[in-house]
Image 1 (cartoon, rainbow, N blue to C red):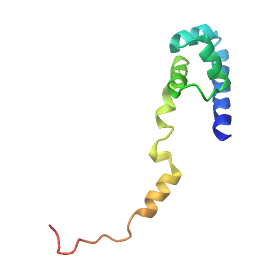
Image 2 (cartoon, rainbow, N blue to C red; image 1 turned 90 degrees about the horizontal axis):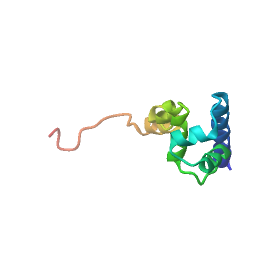
Image 3 (tube, rainbow, N blue to C red; image 1 turned 45 degrees about the horizontal axis):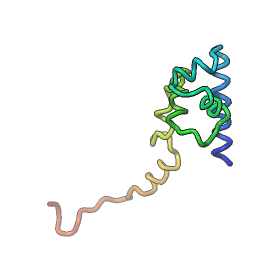
Image 4 (cartoon, rainbow, N blue to C red; image 1 turned 90 degrees about the vertical axis):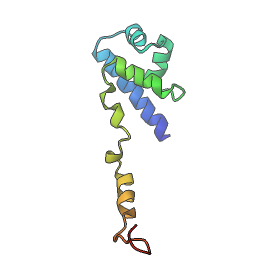
Length: 99
């Protein structure tokens, strides 16, 4: 449910961005290298459309900029917390001394 909801929101946001730019579907579809029917599916948030297609539409609208930081490890609070928790409190040399 959460994925479907997020994709519907993304699709709606992409549609709104296209309309605010006063660009017809045909133009964005051409720029993204997809059919108009596929763009319609993207704007509906269809989960069957590949992530690459969504990225192509973002690029066609000039909105691709932040996609590369979506899963940035430095913004991953849970991952950071787990990593910090796994950091040892003390460092010890292996038995037998340094090599």
